[in-house]
Amino acid sequence: MKIRNHYTKLMFASLLVCLIFIAGCASEDVPDHDVDVHTFANVDDVVVTHMDLDMALNFDDQIISGRASLQFNNLTGSEEIVLDTRDLTIERVTLDDGGEETEFSLGEFVDYLGQPLTISITPETEKVNVYYETSPEAAALQWLEPEQTAGGEHPFLFTQSQAVLARTWVPCQDAPGRRITYNARVEVPEGLMAVMSAENQQERSPDGVYEFTMPQTIPTYLLALSVGDFDYSPLSDRIGVYAEPEILEDAAWEFADTEEMMKAAENMYGAYRWGQYDIMVLPPSFPFGGMENARLTFVTPTIIAGDRSLLSLIAHELAHSWAGNLVTMATWNDFWINEGFTSYMTNRIMEEVYGRDYAEMLWHLDYQELIATIEEMGEDNPDTRLHLDLKGRDPDDGMTAIAYIKGAFFLKMLENNLGRERFDDFLLQYFNSFAFQTMTSEAFLSYFRGIVLEDPVREVPADDMEEIDLEEQLKLDEWVYGTGLPDNCPVIHSDEFAKVEDQIDSWIAGTDASDMEVENWTTHHWLHFLMNLSEELSHEQMVELDNTFNFTETENSEILNAWLLHAIEHRYEEAYPALEEFLLSQGRRKFLMPLYSKLAETPEGMEMAQEIYREARPTYHPISYQSIDEVLDWQN
Image 1 (cartoon, one colour):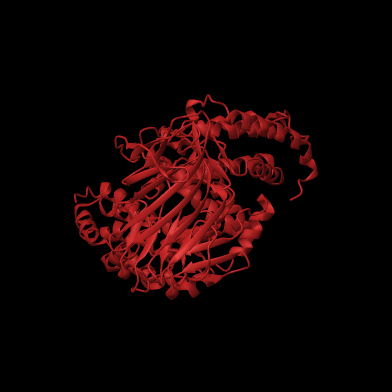
Image 2 (tube, rainbow, N blue to C red):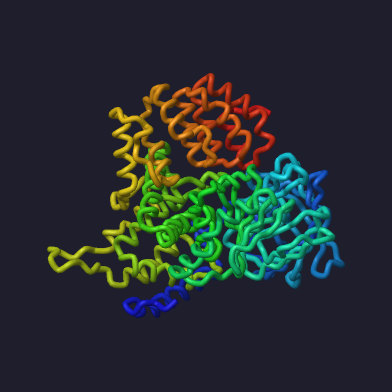
């Protein structure tokens, strides 16, 4: 894309800053804030550049066995390479062409992180071959019985490597600051399909053997594999969807706008650099809304609403093709570098495709969630900073609305102050300058200052009495390193939500629910409606709303989740069967945690929650049940 004329004068400054930044990354002295505390790997001495995987899946024993061959550059002449593992059985290790076995050892187990695998090498060694086997308890792997799938006849497997779970199914340098290419050969039971975060075939292999190539470099948390009874449907010449046959047609219809989203993103942020973009619809136990595995987004079936109303999730995962996958946080302390940029871009993509009113609703909902999160955590809580300190903690602790929404509003604030055109030019240049590289908070602020704040005085209207110092106006350090929310956070007004609030006021004043003006309301209108209802609703009011709008019977997961929270709060027992079914039929942590937490607030609710959980827990992914275990004080 051509850079607009008013911005071309900054191009040479950008190149200089970029070169300085890259040179700094090559320094042997890594500052403390750039040290990855979630990896055992000696990434500053030995850098893995490529991996060849040869794996066989055993659904009966729920294990993967095979070989991981890791090619590397030995930067310091080290005599050992240290890899990350967790719950892996290491059978043997050979060097280079595989003829010579070498010594190896597994270190002490550390919570969340597993064990270091230390392998003896020589300064001349270029490759190690690790023969290994996973555990049935591997946290990245969820093995599903046939009855847990839509078809009910075949088993299913999917992985979830983020944050530091790739090491539970592949011995690797499990650090976001290091990128690899990879090839893989995967053997699965005949009749099943296999796909990875790589170049995929679109038809089933008759012998159950699949081969994959990933030519672009990725961090290991984007390693992904899915195996099951599913087929492929193209959405355009570069986009398609994989799903079980029973839901493939519905999924293809739901995601039909993805190509339009792609074009909108490319117009703003530059070409999509990954070749193919496909969507894999997983069974409902998938713990997240989506996972941005390069070339192959994993999504929950709960976004298939039948009206394309939940597609902001697709826009979000697509935006990761630039923010996160292309320019990646160096460590989990800067998770916002991935998610804040992506969340900002999501709303921009949705605005381009569906209009400004639609995007304003998304921003407003985000703001409400952000305020609620900060109130719950406390304004002085260090975890309300964008740049976190996660030493000694599970990186999942940083996966809150702070990284996503505070990060997005930081960028929205920059857009408002610089002007959209200038900020878009900056982001385009940012993605082009640091493609397939890593980024830290400090490096981003340095780059931004070097490009945008070259002229420290902001242009202001002639009738202003004095010039404004842009550095002071933006409060960059307060946003990134300060707690709470700076006072220059944008306030988003939504005309559509103002209409919703008028209807709420009218209903509270006595208008029948059936007379409310709700024509053409989207999911987001209804979410705002439910989120802004009084906490003192009577049983009669709950009945009136439910009879009029059929909330308990809705197939829209977002609306149902918001309604069920009211049902628990107001002891609306008519919705309890739907609540139980919802908790038993899907494993998305975003829904499970609030519902179980709300139930746990009362003794009778806790009893109900534990009864449901006893049946549901075996169907949940470890990422979900480990969080819920704490809420319910669960004892196995």
